[in-house]
Amino acid sequence: MAGNAQPLVANRAAITACVILAVIMQALDTTIANVALPYIQGSVSASQDQINWVLTSYIVAAAIMTPPSGWLSSRFGRKRILLASITGFVTASVLCGLAQSLTQIVGFRLLQGFFGAALVPLSQAILLDIYTVEERGSAMAMFGVSVMVGPVLGPVLGGWLTENFSWRWVFYINVPLGLMAFAGVSMFVHETRVNRDAKLDWLGFGSLSIAIGALQLFLDRGEQLDWFSSGEIILEATVCVAAFYVFLVHIFTRANGFVRPELFKDRNFATGMLFIFLIGMTYLASLALMTPYLQTLMGYPVITAGIVMGPRGLGTMMCMFIVGKLVGKVDTRVLLGIGLAITAWAMYDMTFWTPDVSQWRIAETGFIQGAGLGFLFVPLTTVTFATLPASTRGDATGLYNLSRNIGSSVGISMVSAILIQSTQANHADIAAYVTPYNRLFLDPAVAHALSPFTAAGRAALDSLITMQATIIAFINDFKLMMILSLAAIPLLVLFRKGKQPAAADPAAAME
Image (cartoon, rainbow, N blue to C red):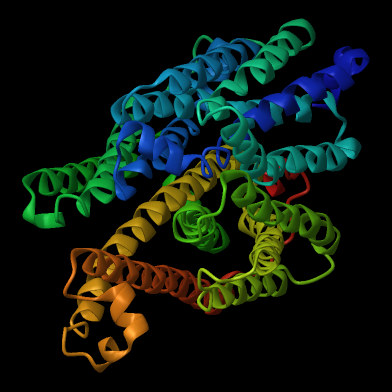
């Protein structure tokens, strides 16, 4: 690749700037919509579990389209696919901003995910081409920072746009970013050689896509339709299992299938896939929980919610730089253990939150949680690929990112379902103790505000019970994520030490 960099050296700074801008645009959309969710929910008349489809649809679409991005660039040219991705992503963003119903916004978010999936891997590949082997470490550090700018700027920028304009501007903001990225790529990036003979395993890709899509529908609609008492849920579960069965049979019986089964014979890679799934499930799920907690339960203005959520990304960025220097000097299993312990402690602290928790404590705990992710991100990728031969890295990184995205979507759906179920159960439990004969109603102050004998009093009582039930439900979700983080620590013994292959791609550590 060093040879490929020579013709592009003159425009290297411009190329770096425009591809990083494309990455930032895509990374922003993973979190920028979070703080605007309550406003979108009210605008399109969606329930609490339905509005999470706005998040999960984007993640699932990106998960499905990430693995074939390499084939698309090889078959049609990297520059063409990158320009098409930017164009499609910006167009889908505008359509999201114009959406008038939940169906429309979820559909357009799917389009966003489909087009946005290729932006990160193709931008990364371009950076690897234009920098020499010696310079790639610095290039990947810039790339990693651009990936993490989204979690930092997303909540703050999303809150500011929603507060001063409307929630639609969290999508319209992609237009100027996309236009600048498109212009830069058009002018400075050179097209790669096209391989007309490149083929995609359509059966493998199709069956995996159907399995992922059916799984997400099953998770998203299960709570709403009372799980297996619904024919639709049974159908979705059946389709998911059948499609995944076809996928497994196909890849184990085809010579050059969509996925290479021998990758999972590597213990580090198989364990890393499990770990990145758990990280995706806990980290993004906790972000999805923070929006209703801060804005609905605590009554924070949208811009305040964005500001107190911002330190998570700052913690991740700072620790990524620190840990990047420790990788290779400290056993990666130790670094991973520290990261999981920090993450578990942050979740433990959140189990003590009430709506009276201070803004400083929310920001502080968020920073610590982000620091935990910083300790996990680079070491996990390093140890996952440490014992794989370089020739398998392309397929392995695609699967690795697929596992992370599926973990994120499953986590968001799971905590949303638990939140709704737990709130209902807690409401029933607490209400059982609220009777007209409770001695507390003898207190004149209590009887005046919460009298069970008046309509206003009963409404106030129900509101108070619902709030308390919701607080307990959030605590249950935080506790579950804490347990998952702690349960992952013993699995660190499954990783074995191995030297990084000499030709290893430093991108793997930042992808």
